[in-house]
Length: 443
Image (cartoon, rainbow, N blue to C red; front, side, top):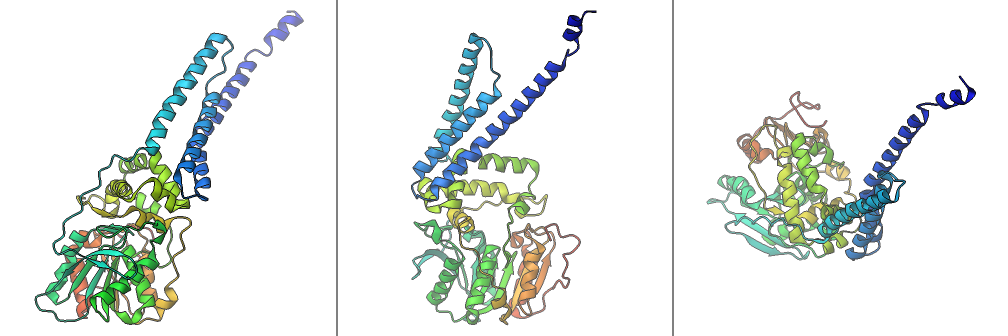
């Protein structure tokens, strides 16, 4: 065998392996760039939106960055042909793919969502307060045949921005048979209440100010507050600042006094199919643009997507989240028509003021308090337990086979506990600090 033949055969296969590794590395880089395209586009959108309330320039910049980076990813992904005919084919493929993506993404970003806003439920006796805070508030007043006290019951819905006046009035209106006047109202930005021109006006401070204005409007020296979820946080903040005006307080599936992110716990209660349906809806280009804008500039988001359109899209997502609010396997047929998207999203934006620490103020109160917690609540056990620890003498009732919306899942047990507490009778209090063995939520 000659030296030439040995030199020819020795490296056989090695260039191919190096070539295969190079192709694989190239594909990985290309896929990374393609995946980064929407991320960089949204980052560019957020950057410009932080300095202007006009959404158009920010959205255009975001789309331009997305299209440019996406094209770069395509250039890296497609092989480099050596012959002129294949180069023309490659160029045509690049043009077709890029055009297809741009034609799909750009109109979808600017075109309004096709979702029809859900019809708001007609509630008999609905009226409106025009409060000195500037809020236009829808409410219903339920009166007993024989009033037994001048202290009304006021129900505070959750969310924020999740109002269901018709069902809540039907349920808590049962307290009229015990002689209570009951008020159920939609917080500003939700249900049939007015929306704010500037979404930055939504938040806990506004809701507490509205509640005190409502107390004055109905001429009550004291109120019995029943707060559900976020409504419990409103009740706690009101109690901390206006202790003398609260006769009793009920905290139903309460939001934490030391707030922490709850989105992952909520999503974990969806099965894979439900989670995919929700994710696909959130990946809509216009939705991504709107939610990104809310985080950095709610005014710009509001200018891009108005209240009616955003409320309709929020209602669609909330319907998909319904199973997470109840125990697994429970029949879920409830729809909510009183959603307020910006009332929900703006207070949770990255630039929104943090919620105040109310614990020291609440520890000084002696107001009787009841905490109601369901076994399938997606909120942590500690979010309810801390109310009992902070509020002196607070009692906690544990409701088995009840989710976050415990009064819908176990209406009989819930109402019995509520009535006993309001009447000063013993309630079936849960004594332990640790959650029960059958509790399904986070600790």
